Length: 141
Image (cartoon, rainbow, N blue to C red; front, side, top):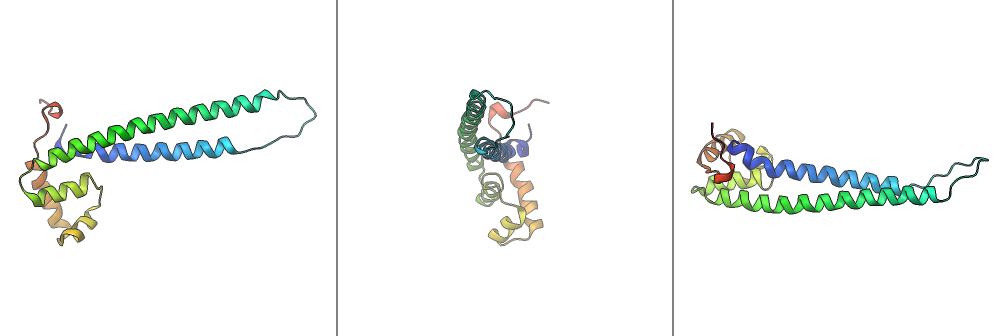
């Protein structure tokens, strides 16, 4: 795993969590829709209850999964923050924190730090080179 891949894990996990939250909202919308079809045929009155129960069960399962992912994201962000703090240059630390913990675009980082985008990207490359990955994340090649 490269340094950039390691540091980017939090962003990707955050995106997956947001996607799951959107899916839960969609499931909630579906579960609360009440439609009825009028026909001359008798219908099982328990069908709607079972259908709603299945939807609620799926929503609860999804929310449990989201909570696990959020716990993992918090732990991962702390791990990444500790890795970034080990970088000696505070300017490098700032760039890495803004990019990999705050998920800011290059333009915003450049504005915040008073640099050009290109300068921030050059400093970012140097910052990546100064990061030492935790032993568990190193890949032997």
